[in-house]
Image (tube, rainbow, N blue to C red; front, side, top):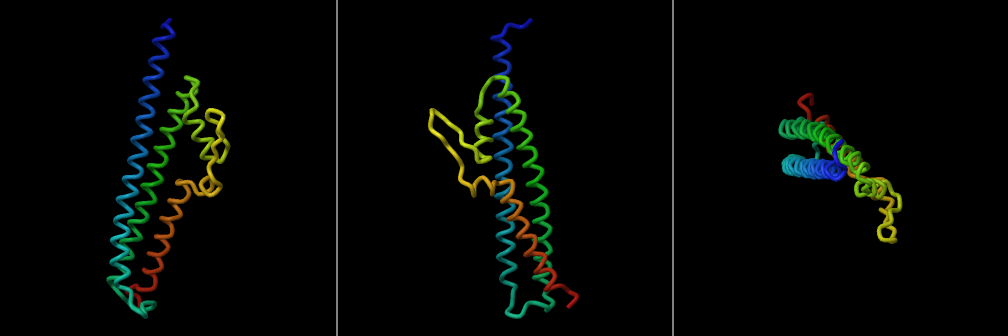
Length: 163
């Protein structure tokens, strides 16, 4: 039977590796977000230049194509965000499972805090605000992306070649 000190060391090394994966997927999530928001911002600037005072119901190929590209980029953004969020949540769950074996509470306290519960650290209570608990990143980001999807879809529909 392995000695307890060696076993505990292996679990701590596994926990450090799990935390490193959480950091990696967290950074990747935000790097991808930044790349897509930059692309969408540049494309939106192009599209808004193509809007004329009476653009609804008038064929405008540049506005239509730009909106189509924006729509497709937004769909890719949403899919990529969802996939990478799932990886991030998976890595958090892995680290929390190891954390429980070590009797640590870092990630569990973080989850409790993000859910809107009070967490005490050195007898001082911490609690996230109601807006932060409701509009967490996993909800706010898909809403933002969906707004872009709706805007691009609207511009596609009102400027298409069918007019």
